[in-house]
Image (cartoon, rainbow, N blue to C red; front, side, top):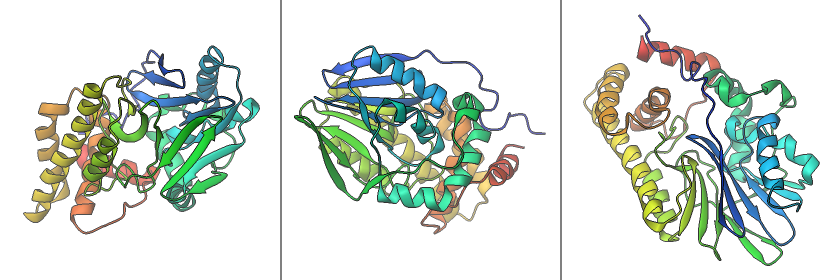
Length: 321
């Protein structure tokens, strides 16, 4: 008998939001393990990094930005394509948004699987899509794409938008402020929160984290969890994410090599990782998706299969019943 509620449908407790100043140019909007948003304030404009999941939720980000600046929010940056990060984009149009920026890889993922991902994510975690009826019909489309690296100047402030490698998705994008040595990582890095890896590239992810570390950030805003405000905290976030991803993939790869079925590999990997990471936010939510993707990758499926609402439920029932 299935004893676990599907994904995070039973997670109804609202989280306390923090809005922290990292420098004259950077703020972090965090919510106790819910998805984070980054804010960059230049001489003449503001950039928002990841929009929140609905326009109503984005309105709270805007309210807090307006407490510290009246400059127009000209740019929205999508760190990747997941619905929980992008569907609030329409709220920024009234604030002067001129461009929605994403990597070309992220654009292509929206084309390929955006509709399915939207339905899948809303079904998994309804609380994160508060007032979902306010999301406009259709998908959130970037208006400006890049490959590898793009530099924006917000007046005299240099903002580097970088692809440092695949990990959480193939389109992962970070924002780097060289002057302040502050990095916004999206879901490539989490802190005290379980990395979701259902669309991941496990074999690439550790190297991508090493590429982030090579920039030597003094501060880092992860995709989930508290803003990391010292080099030591940054290292802890990078090391924790790297350890989780590496240990999960090693466990699953060993199971595949031994010819074991997915459910047996899942149970063993879950129990093993729970001893070290079970207290992390959304651990029970992520593990079925993470192990399924790792099993596919270890079995030779280079690219992630598309998650649909139907596939989500079938997978959950197969592994958790």
